[in-house]
Image 1 (cartoon, rainbow, N blue to C red):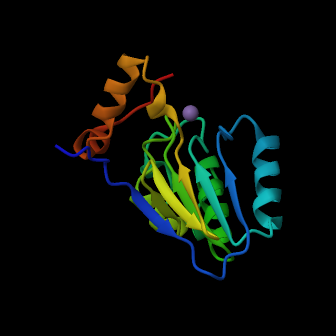
Image 2: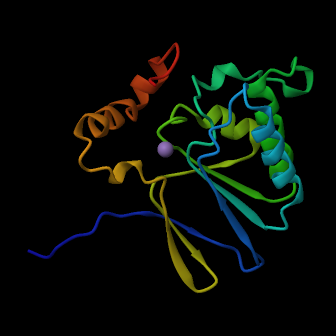
Length: 169
Ligand SMILES: [Mn+2]
């Protein structure tokens, strides 16, 4: 019997892209405003045609209902400020988001609000004649059986939908 390789999501960069950026593990949180400011400065000034956020952008994400549905009238809580910046960035470059183990509860609602494309982990990016495997990497912690089982459970859509309260440490 022939060996089979699991199908992977693929993203083909449009020929117009010259530069792509990869960022991850910023662990943004309300109590660390300097990190938010550095991130904001970066997003507002990068010359990249596309930015790939490869997991753990947020220290914790308790669910998309933390964000106001109308960002233009929000009171400016931390989640809203992050969402607004993502949306503004997506207005001038292509923005992609992959889950990490801290922010796996980011959902399609936030992505739609911010005009950001959610990527499967892993995803192959075909760009300028090369193929790049994009992954947050937590699924490769093969020795951590408890975590991998937890990861599989929370990725069931029904369970994620029922998640409430603070995420695990
Ligand atoms: Mn992580």
